[in-house]
Length: 416
Image 1 (cartoon, rainbow, N blue to C red):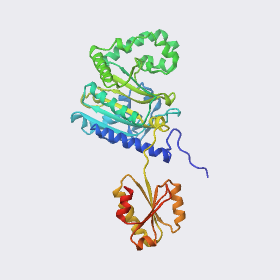
Image 2: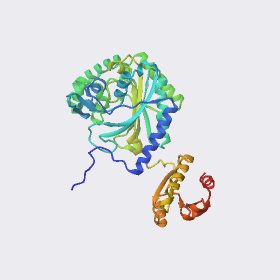
Image 3: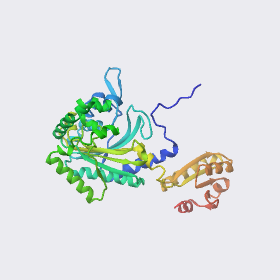
Image 4: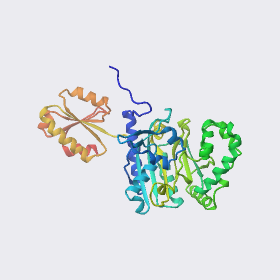
């Protein structure tokens, strides 16, 4: 019988790597809560029209990359390709956007039909933070602080932050028209995707990864030439605040992001260790999204961190904090109750220590060998002599030393 294989582009995470994933999740959750963010849980499946309306009909995500299917009631559903639209939809539905300024975070898998390669899978994981109801660059700065803390905690040194301002929606319309007029005479020199975008969404051309297309854009109109004074003032304030906080950044005038709902500030963190798919984290402001989805006008800004890529960038640099491991070994059937009680006592006293109750195995040598092989630091032995004297033997598997006839208090004190 042929064995089953995982679906192309989906994730298998090894036991060792899963520990790093758990650490990232725990650290990030604690950090976000320290900034007073609240966790929101979102569905993986949404109606397809949600992404068409928010992300944009002419984006690659909607046109090429979504996993969409019809339900039994013939409604088009989609595995979420990104989280911001779903978070805003849920926040409108739950009345969150009507309750004043909000700070939310969520994490989980996203799905896009792309060619799998290093740093890019069809199933990928994101940690996202969204701020609603704050029309101030201080909201962006707070997100920068959070992401910088996460990146630095995991010792990723080879990264850079790029920022840009797209201006208001009106600014973007004016710039799009100017860019379109500039590129139309050059249409035959553009790649096929850029030719398709030229009529419907010329801003997406700025995001092209092809060097030939980027060369054509060297003398093209610049978005900074079409930004309103209000948008320019916001962008200058953002750069000043970043400098004040000594957060290094580069201004990238071609940074536009791949989604239609952004206005004003957009930003990306990139890591050179990730290869061609080098965007580690990205986000921006999307003040019109709530109204597009049927909610009230709400200023909003958010950021999404690619957990897959963070793990890839740090797994050879970051060393997980060591956790002590203890095996509790009962050598007779009648000692199992006592071993369970002891295991619970140690767990309640030391929540960060891993306790494994090995159950019944009267071959002590075999049990100790298994514990040593699985990198346990200690073994607590419950044999007849220990039970009759109401004591415990603690074996230090790292040094090989035995500590015999310990009372429960002495055992707990030793472990401290």
